[in-house]
Length: 253
Ligand code: 5GP
Figure 1 (tube, rainbow, N blue to C red):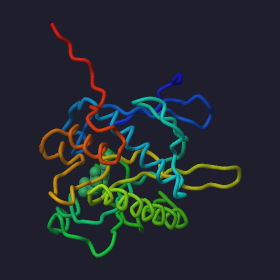
Figure 2 (cartoon, rainbow, N blue to C red):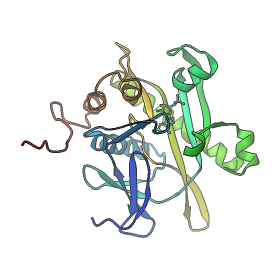
Figure 3 (tube, rainbow, N blue to C red):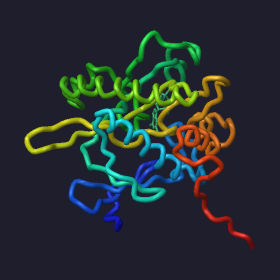
């Protein structure tokens, strides 16, 4: 499918105009960044794995009635998605204390939380995506009260779905980040899950061993990120066992 004009390039993905009005082509890059792009690398095959995994989660969500931007996967690196107005918030759902919440509140990583905790960060790279309260969101008009009710309900439905799917393959869903977009159907508007759902945006721990199978492997130099994501893909049946992700060809002199 022919790509249109590039309309946005992010750290891990590029968006191009799609073939029909209201569609976009989302291209998954191999670039990995952490700590607001202070740490950077190119990880062969990461984009392919995230494309396949995000497709798997988005299709699953659609099948249980959670609306997403996903339309179809085009090839190993690209998917056709519905274009939407992204709400300028990162929605984080936590089941187990880890990462920035553990650092901020001094709660030991791995502590089970009494219930899912939702946090909101303003999507702003220059400010380092700061944590914001619902008061900030209302006062600065980043989302309406109706949007916030819908966002909470969508986030909890995604959490239940993802946690169940991951539990079924021996993985604990510690936390994740989603982005939500607004689409217009005639006079009506509604919110849908956008961006991606992949080990780049989740914390996934093996239930038996506690092994990290997510981007913390890159953030904390814990080994091969491709091996970790491949393990998740294999367990979910997204990649046939023994198959390696497509990598760049090796040049032999
Ligand atoms: P933390 O706030 O602990 O750094 O992150 C919480 C969860 O949200 C983790 O699963 C992390 O991967 C995800 N997350 C937070 N910010 C971002 C972001 O800017 N990009 C991506 N891909 N994931 C994020």
